[in-house]
Length: 604
Image (cartoon, rainbow, N blue to C red):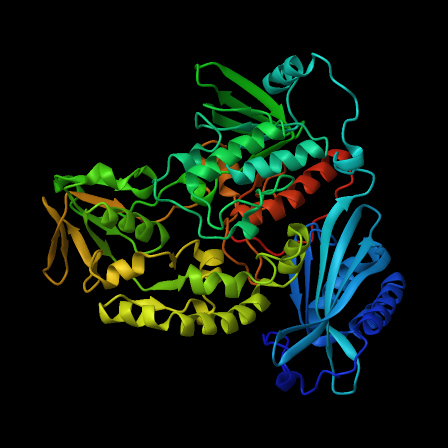
């Protein structure tokens, strides 16, 4: 019917099999899982494959591969099982729950959730079963996930500290924060949400760690960005681990509010942090395998730490702004700055501003300028994917990340259980409805010459984020300002360079400007790391972010080509979910129970 590399939704038409109206989903799920468990226990690769559709997908998140892997089609799943099934020693497979799910009118499957163990890990799994022409149900999607380590639970709930502390806590915290009694196991460079999430996870696994943050306060990464910055993801998607946002929290969080929450989070969870501090050098001792990391504090003093693990949690692009090389910059008599250095529209009242770039930051900043009466023009170099948050977010986020949805941990499992390239097929359908709902706005943009696209293969913004970390705008009002002429638009010619008074273009046109603001994203994520590590280590750094051939994020959330060197990043949702996996990997290495990675070839 299809080849192993063909991606399609298992609809009634594609399967040539209807979903029975009277099916007992619980019984089908239990019968399938019993057969799966029997085949796994016997290391029967053929028996396992007999339970799968020929074009099935298997996504493993660190449970059986100690890596992020996706295998699609019988041939690739067979190779994976032949290589890993016997050694994994999967056991104690137990059904958690099952239900009949209807993602679309023409797509119905049985979704079953199960728990399992290996000799080392506790795992969760999700399988989605579809009907076949002969009446059997077979797995079309299966997911196995690292959930915990045997004998190493988090220090939460019944494992929390029950001992009273009378008058000693303050002095204990001071010594802990100073690391007066020794070095931490892990040094984390960066105190944004990804660094904080990881530090909290490690602490509750009993792994000592220290965050090195260059800003004066936790949250300054958000607090000091442009004042109009507001999250475009809804609150249900953005909870942090252990301490969710209050029920009264707004759906879309202002950046300054998030900054204060990060600071509160760090204090409440007693995270060890040195602010106003920077790493100036990091090198690995070959004999001991430890990292020697030189840290300079705000007062100029230095300390060299010997740690087992060095984690860079530097955010998008490592905070390394991408500044395009535009000829004639030295002639320009006005001001130039990157969006990371922009603070507020009121700084440029009475001036003409040109913003180079046409994605999220560009629109947010332009709208702020327009609201303050500033003459602002967006220079759009290429087409932009536009989706309104009003129409798009409910369609994309419901039912998992919306009011009335499941608990966050459960939503995370369900969301991440879908292979990324398969999720593209779902996104294409949802985004088609969003495009129709946004039609009036998009038509208005097209009438004034604004160029749009529908994302990669019509999949919207998700894959632009996964591949480029940009290329889209989730509209909260700036688009109407463009249509109304409150934000001017220039996109009819390629930029040639600066003039004394602004910009010139290859068609001979010019734009006067007092301020040229670059909303041009960030550079290579590896550059800030390469400034700190030896050249041979820097050369071994694989490409960070983007998708590999299997559809998995490259390099992030695992080691970076050298033992003990890690990269941790992501929006609030990804940081929440994958910080657990990074912490469990590090804990497993600390305890000597980490297995051998089964990795896809890296890209350098």
